[in-house]
Length: 452
Ligand code: DLL
Image (cartoon, rainbow, N blue to C red):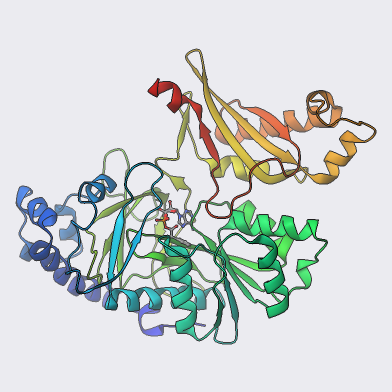
């Protein structure tokens, strides 16, 4: 279903006109209301009236995450607190979070783009939507909630965690759409196996998964395990939360951006230069309609590609490729750039290991060392431990013939795909910590050493 045909299928020339009209209003708003942006325009010798077309935008520098932190908590708000009806904040692990505010109109717009996303992913008023993203300062829960309600679906606001309860309600209430992180979807499936539940018999038909990078191989794994279609949804709190872009269930071929609200560019993360359509680089977004927390050329840190080729589903808006990773999650191992999602794709090629893994980076002498820890499948585990009483015996994992062969295969495949030699350590099923929100895939011990 197409929720907002007028904007989702708009002729691209009309869309450009609409974006430019909105851009002109936006630059005036931030110049007049946000001292940070007034300074930025003035220092760069740009007057708001000079920004008339999309190309003019490049006269302005980008806004970075640290600019948001410097203005903590409300310095970048372009509306008075009287007009602000909601505050969310990013899940910053160190120091103060990044605060974002919404006026009533912002909340309405967010619900609309989320409703679009969910409709594109195959949701309608007939569906029962289980929102298993966290509710709270994190935007996942409330974002999906308001969008699903606007669509007229029946919402189960269960929030994250409570894995067994998720399964009970899913079965008893007949959930048809599940919204959560892909890693949580895998965790819930694991628990279903332990409980002996056949989830493929559940009425669930689609999952709207996002908030963390995941690979195409992970999609196939989740779709097979749950017997559903899994659609990728993207967003970030600074821009609005989930709903910036989402895949349609018909084509599952790139995430449709809400172009009438968010203007996207791709830049080279090193040089900041704007790249031509189709090239991979860092996504930069300008919010065209936000009132309380508008951002001009915000560097998202996310690495992707854009295309304006129309989709077979009939939508004409820009499509964004699955996020490859965050520029700050990119590991540099002995000079080679490595994204965790690349390692994930290789691991998922092997049915003998599970999609539960962790990358541990350390420094041995002057050399970076990457160790991939991955759980072996329960059936392989059973095979290799047969007849052995104590599974504490690490030798089973290091000396067993099948595991030695498997390890050398995985190491070879990783070397072929990413070009670095890695260590591979097998773990018992269930031993790598499961995530109820965003998965923590990387443990970088080099940082600790740098600090000391
Ligand atoms: O994660 C908003 C969200 C909630 C998106 C629910 C989708 C679903 P933040 O906590 O601010 O907001 O984190 C934003 O998460 O810059 C990306 O690096 C990453 N991210 C979000 N969606 C995806 C995705 C929410 N589909 C940061 N694929 C973003 C890859 C994603 N990474």
